[in-house]
Length: 309
Image (cartoon, rainbow, N blue to C red; front, side, top):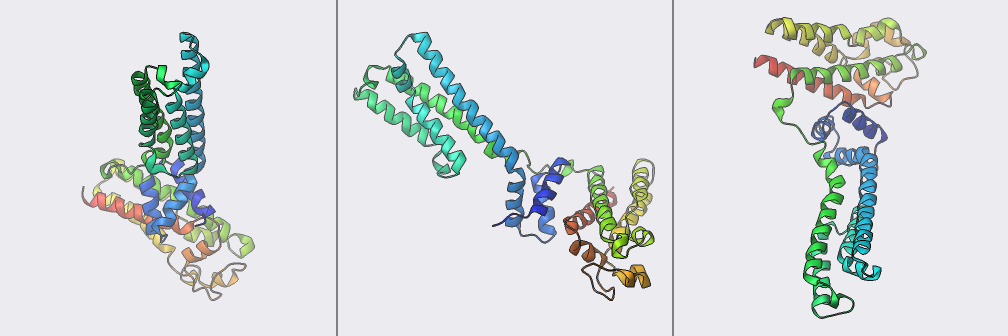
């Protein structure tokens, strides 16, 4: 499966704005993307941060174990080779865990292998295999188990980061203000696309762009209604935003009339029968349909919440 650069860019933008894994993937699915495609591109979007975190944790774990071995060697005056042999289960376990994290293979054995390595170490000591026979094998086995599982928990954290850090919040935490920010963000993005697609070099005019833009005054009016107005005023202000969004589902001829005949250089029906939202989608690199679907979804969520007030 290949990644979609536009989707990856869109997902990173939404993460920066505070949206969660569940919210982003749900929006992408509602916009027509397959769930496995949405999840794959989400993993690509968070991969750089997660990969850096993995490398850092692996490096610090190796350094910590090396420091521990050197410290015990100097403090006990034991031969350095014997100290290394005494911590062989921890060393082998750490190398195995780093290999699992890097290759993402044999993950199912992650929790088992430290116990296996320690058990082999214990058996070698009990049967007096040099140099393990002269060690306090019971205490060292327990210590190696503890160290190995501590490293396992630490190294496993970056892999869990992607699922835990972006977990879906409880529904009641999503307020009207949360959804309004979503509408505002998406509408601003759509307005930028309108400016690029219906620019003068493509035959567009200022009046044409103004006819389909979602004015920022509408968000401000709704915010005032939320703070100071009645339920009816809130619905009235919100529906103005909704009508502006639905306006994009009209054809160019319905909105622009004869002015549509002057448009050029665009992927569209030459008679003006293409929907405006489709023209925007086909002539810009941004995931316009995602913006549009998200804005409509947020509009519906806000309206439902107001009606329940």
